[in-house]
Structure formats: structure tokens, C-alpha cells
Amino acid sequence: MKSFISKAIFILVGIILLPIHLQAQTNPVEVKTVTLENSLIRFWNNTGFANLEWSYALMIVIGILFIYLGIKKKWEPLLLVPIGFGILIGNVPFVAGNQIGIYENGSVMNTLYGGVVKGWYPPLIFLGIGAMTDFSALISNPKLILLGAAAQVGIFLTFIGAYLLGFTPDQAGAIGIIGGADGPTAIFLSSKLAPELMGAIAIAAYSYMALVPLIQPPIMRLLTSKKERLIRMRPPRSVSKKEKVIFSIVGLLLTAFISPNALPLLGMLFFGNLLKESGVTERLADTARYALINTITILLGLTVGASTQANVFLTVDSLKIFALGAFSFAIATAGGVLFAKGMNLFLSDRNKINPLIGSAGVSAVPDSARVSQEMGIKEDKNNHLLMHAMGPNVAGVIGSAVAAGILLSMLKS
Image (cartoon, rainbow, N blue to C red; front, top):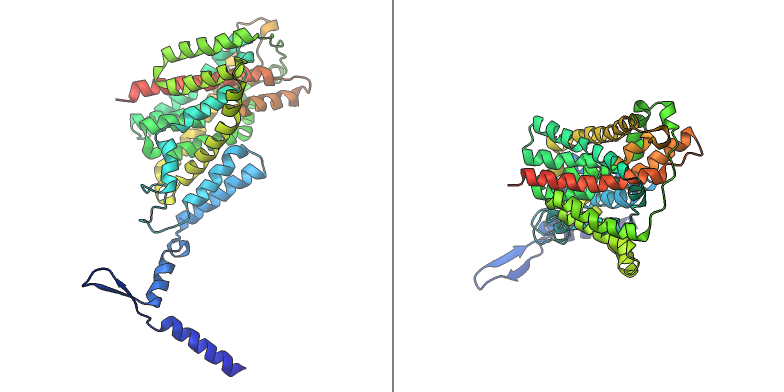
């Protein structure tokens, strides 16, 4: 038995090491000779194991962490799970030249990534958001739009901070929009101003959107008193269908005339809302808020994640962008809360605003509104702030798009 095993091993080793000549006639003169041994070596050199570096391993760990947070913690799973899996796809090491990577022209991933690079995924996302959004809270209490505007202070302060850290004006503008907590808007603007930083900006924007329940509550508690957190707001009035339809049209014209460069985002947002509120295009509205936005979310999340290829993504600039993103998000949250406190100085007791809803001025819809609701319930289990918070929340969506258009008009040559 031992003799048989020894002979089998000997024969196997011999087969592997024996030069087997495979001739491929490439032209009448040249003959290419390949050995099995060389083929096996070439195969090994093309595997991910042979090309693995610590940077790729680190990004793979980050991708797994995103998936864990999305599934286990349920932090924006519709974003974190596709992005996390995209990070895994983008960081499997490979040998360049086979049209595999997301940055290789002609590859499938590169073709799908075109929706990010060319900026046409974000308007389609806005179409779906518009078809899902009820603007009633904002229409019934128009002054809440000021809270959405106030939260955009994070965008412009971060723009200044990024410029002081050595980024170009265009790059600083693209980084600043992270403060709006709006991933599609961040992608849209960075595709126009700083495509080289798009991966880091998109990941930072979506990461902080997912971390809303973790980042905002400490800031909200720090800036408000117990008495302020117990403020009960008047129930919003009923809004008619006619008002909602008019708002879709007037809202588009007012915001687009102020910021024409944001027209792709604003146009699709209000068009989606008109489909929803008109009552005669329900089938189109259903497509926009379900099939279309789900498809685009999958493609956008997957390709944005895949764009974090370690050799492109892991840079000092990426670390700066993440730090600036955290600063921007904190400032935006604080800006909304503090502005609500300031408004209360001029409002009667009957019309006072609970400052907790000011944090919803960032456009992370509807998560920041839910945080306001949860914070209010902790203080008073009968104090429901969700519908009130949706006012500044949707105003923040509009505000971040307008801010993106303003930055684009100021910076794009």
C-alpha cells in the first residue's frame, strides 16, 4: 500500500514538473511554447491571494463592518449593505488589464459607475424621493423652511474649512456639501467639481447619514434644556390636494430661479412629488418610489462602494474629508437646533417650536426626523414630533440642493 502511494505521489509530481509543450501558431514564423508549470505560476500570480496587500485587507474589513451595521444595527441598511458589499467587490486584488476593475474602461463595473461619474443617478434618486415625500408639514407651517435653511450653515463653514486645509476651491465646495447629509446631492456636486474625490465624499456622506442616530442626540441634548425639549407644538393643519399640487409647481419655479444649476435635482424632486399629489399618475408615482428608486439605490450603492479601491481611496485627503464630514454634520445639526431656539424668542407661547426638530433640517430623510421623534418621546411619551420634524427635514432636502446649485454657479468655470 505504501509503495502504491509513493508511486502515485511520484507520478503526480512528475506531471506537474514535466515540461509539457503546448504549441500555439501565432504566425508562420513565431511559435509560442508554454509549460504547465508556467501556466500554474501565471494562474497563481493572477489570484487575489498573490496580490493581496494590507490596504486591501483593511478595506475588506471596513466593507464587512458596513454590512454588519446595516444588518445587525439596522443603520440605513438600504445604503450600508449595498455600499459594504461594493467595498468587498472593489477591493478584491486583481491584475490590471483584464477590464475587471471599476476604473478600467470597458469593464462592466466601469459602465455602471458611469451613472455616478456623469451624475445621472442622483436626479433619478430625487425623482423617487419626491414621489415618496409628503410636503404637508412644510406647507401647513411654512416658517419651518427656515430650519432647513439654517442647517445648511454646515455646508458653507465646511467649505471654508476645507479650503483652509489646502483643498482647491472646487474640491472644498464638493466636500462642504457633506454637511447637508444628502448622499445624492454630494455625488451630483462632486461629479461636477471634484470627480477625483468622489469616492471619499460619497462614502463620507452616506456614512454620516447612516450614523444620524448616533451623532445627533448628544448635540441635541447639549444645546437644549429640559424645558425646551418638553415644548408641545400645535398640531399641523390639514392641507388640501390643491395646495400640494400648487406647491410642486411654485416650489420648483422659486427654487430653480434662485439656483438654476440645481435644476436636475430640484426638477426631478418636484416632478416626483407632482406625480404623487396629482392623483392621476399613480402608476408613474408607484414606479418612481418603488421599482426605479430601488434599482438606482442598488446600482449607486454598489458602485460607490466599489469605487473605494484601496490604492485610490486610502489617502491623506480621504482622512481629511472624513474629519471635515463629521465637523460639517455636527455644525449642520447645531445650526438647526440653535436657529429654532432663536425663533422662539419672537414667537408666542402658543406657537413656539420644539428645538429638537431643528436637527431635522439636515436632509437625511426621514432618519433625522425620527431622531427628533425619539428624543421627544424620551422626555414626554405623549409628545409626538415626527410630523413637525418632517417640515424642516424635507426643507433640508430642498435646501441642500439649492446650496449645491449655488456652489456650482460660484465655482464652476
